Length: 135
Image 1: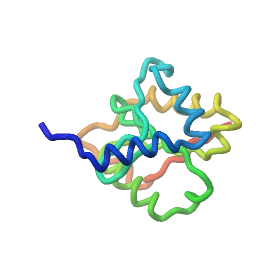
Image 2: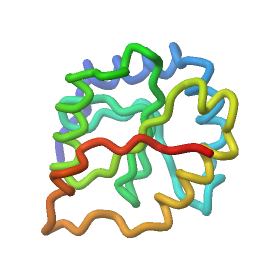
Image 3: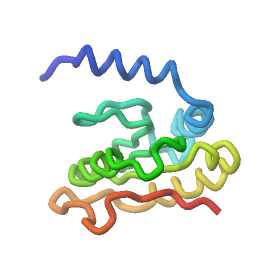
Image 4: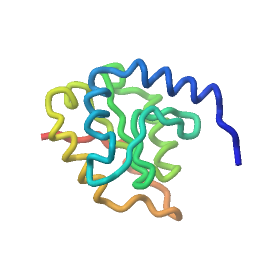
């Protein structure tokens, strides 16, 4: 068994302590298996990246983004890597989380109800990013 990566663990801890208001609000709704019994963890290292939230069981990653992520080329590369490794990625804007948390939670619950990606199939190459649509 592989030991802990001290650098990545320290980075994750630092990010947890520096959470945005939107990340904190969403975490308070995701933690303790509050959505249909699914467990989420936050600021989790996956490969070369650290994701905001992940449900390992359903291979669902949730990212909460500020305006700096609009049209981000590095986010496209990151999401492609995660999809290629059988994760699904939902992204929500900070203002969606802060102003419509119920809508955000509904989108997350619908994604959790879907089956996780099959281990023999790559992600959909036509859709490397999926922005959570909140109504």
